[in-house]
Image: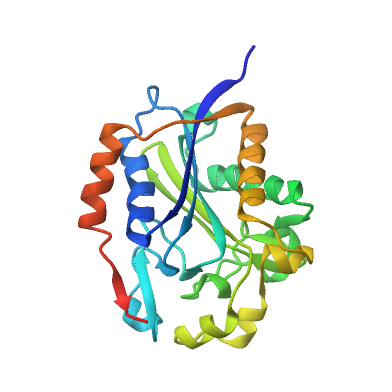
Length: 258
């Protein structure tokens, strides 16, 4: 039997509002049994913080642009990185409706992408043992939840999921580098210890990756993990309309100007 074909969107660099509007539009436009799962790969220009859906930028930031994600989780900085957004439904993936199951299953594809790059990653529950309890910190960097991804005992990037009945959006980041001084100067309450407990692709491997390498690794790993072909495809008219509406409204810039 030939593998199924899913959609790949290579979006390049987009502004923060468009990035989050696009992720949510893909979720809202998805129709189980009709739509095919989509992997979207993208970057951020200008660099920006993203906040969990209920966070307050004035309480978290001294300076810096911020956009609210359609998902939960803590504050994240997006600059020199590749971000993925994945939209699917649990029935197509053969999963139950439990959030933790789909989250772990999708994030396993990210671990496999890191392996393609020569990096040995693991879930926090396996890599950090006693530290792997659920965290309530404002910053994604300060929390170690069981299915966070770690390399060498340090967390890399962040991942979050939102459900809409049996359809879900999961997105996450793989940073190549990180300006810790800028991060610490921009955030209220983030400590130097927090900033040292995270890592990046280049630090973990000791060499400089290109974003194209990371994109290729993610696409290859997702295709192999789910046993499908990924074919680049355009946005639908419905998705484009939703993106325009969400960008102009819900995802207008928030936070403190740099």
